[in-house]
Length: 236
Image (cartoon, rainbow, N blue to C red):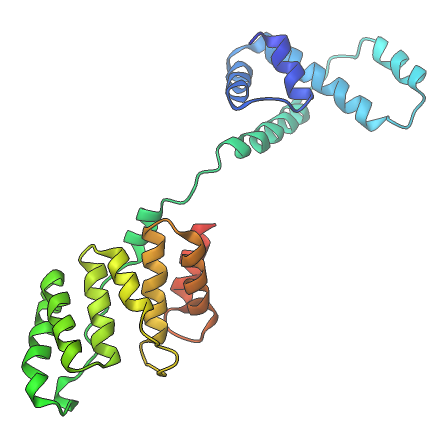
C-alpha cells in the first residue's frame, strides 16, 4: 500500500494489522514520511482542538503555513496511538503450558499410615505412597486405585487423582478429582483438590473452568490462596 493511503487509513481508524506494521516501519526508517506524518497529525489535532470555531476561521488558519517547531510532543502522541493500535493486534494469549509447569508440583505425602487401623490394607497403602514418592506415578495411580476399592477414603482418592495428573494423564486426573464430593464430606483435601483441578484445566487451555476452581481457592483463607491469585493474574 502506498504511503498516502497508509496515512489516510491511520487517520480514519481503518488500519489493518499488516498496514499497522508497514506504517510503524516507515516512521522508523523514512525521515521524509515521518515529517509529513507528524505535520498531518498536527493539523488533525488543530482541527480537534478548535472544533467549536466557525468553519471559515478554521480553514483560514489552516491556509497559513505553520512555523517550524519542535515536534517532540507530536512524536509522543503518535507513539502512544501506535502502541494502542498495536495492542489490538499483539495481545498474546497466556502460555497455558508454561503457567501450568511453573505452578504444578506433586503434593507431598501428608498421611500418617501409623494412625490408620486397617492393618490388612497397610501394605498396599505403603506401596502406593512409596511409588508416589519415587515419582513412579503410573504405578502409584494403579496402587491407589486398588487401595480405594478396599479403603474408600478421601486421601486415597486424592492421591489417586493426583498420581494421574503428575503422570501426564491430566484429563483422567481432573475427572477423578472432580467426581469426589470433597466439600460434602468436609474433607481436609477440599481446597487442595480445587487447586489441582484448576491447574489441570490451565494445562488443557480451559481458562473458564480453571478460573472457577482457582477463584474458589483464592477466595479462601488457606496457604494456596496467594498462589491461586498469581495464576489467575497470569491468565489475564
